[in-house]
Length: 136
Image 1 (tube, rainbow, N blue to C red):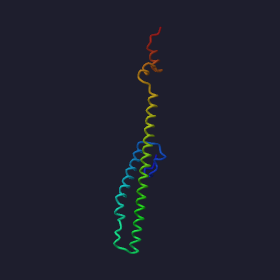
Image 2 (cartoon, rainbow, N blue to C red; image 1 turned 120 degrees about the vertical axis):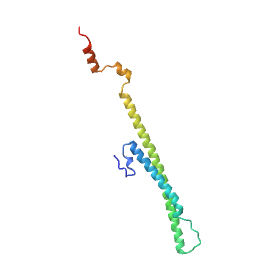
Image 3 (cartoon, rainbow, N blue to C red; image 1 turned 90 degrees about the vertical axis):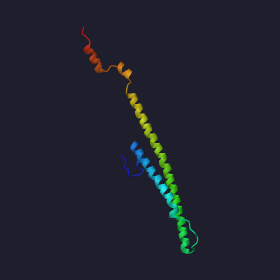
Image 4 (cartoon, helix red, strand yellow; image 1 turned 135 degrees about the horizontal axis):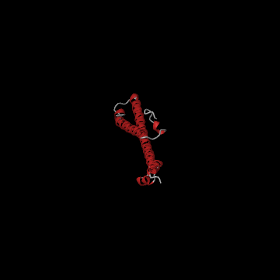
């Protein structure tokens, strides 16, 4: 089986409904994280007012710009991860659907329909019929 705590564990496992649900839960968490970071950027990196000027203030503004740049880069990577995971979830769903369709087709091929079953006696029915027939 797969370790549910390993985020990429579903890449090498057989596709099951549980695996697909786990991937969907990870996607929800990823989207939630993206939204939380996006909403935090303005409070973490307020725009500089420029009212207070000194070497320390300039370095502070430079660091804020660096932090803002890193956060925006992180947001882009989160969005890319969302898109990749969403694509993988679609692939997993297609694999699961194909497996289910193949199972249904295999079952349909091995189960005779009622008309054929009634017209083809099996060995037990043939023996039973022979024992009921009068001897000459």
